[in-house]
Image (tube, rainbow, N blue to C red):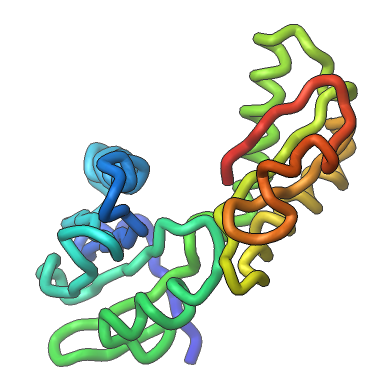
Length: 201
């Protein structure tokens, strides 16, 4: 079934449920998702905007919003077990579009998989080069993602790196991960340029 995400005019009566990872140990684990939700609320794009988290309250639940049309957006950097299986199961979703009594739920791709992420990272890296008075052509860009202990969770960051490499703006573009190979701690063997910009993805 084709899923139509509607127009900004249609969003005015809909709810946006942002699902972040959060943390049971770090108080700043929710910061990025809260800031994003606040900015979207400020722009008045949706009738309701609520954030929730996998690891801390409020936990993912459709009861957090009341609108009959709900967009669920994982605030994750990439596709993985959370976005493909765990979040949909927690919310009782059956696919991209789930029909529930009196309610339609549209399940969206994780934010980090948007094709505009590469351009965003490039723009910020170029700005850092300007303020640091270094040439992008002699600078390596290290795209850092969380990854997964089971491996194979880096597709989005690898796609971002591939796009940035194709642009030819930087001396090198490499990826590194917190929970899979190649590890962030191994960055000196991943890039050789005299200047390095670390870009958390």
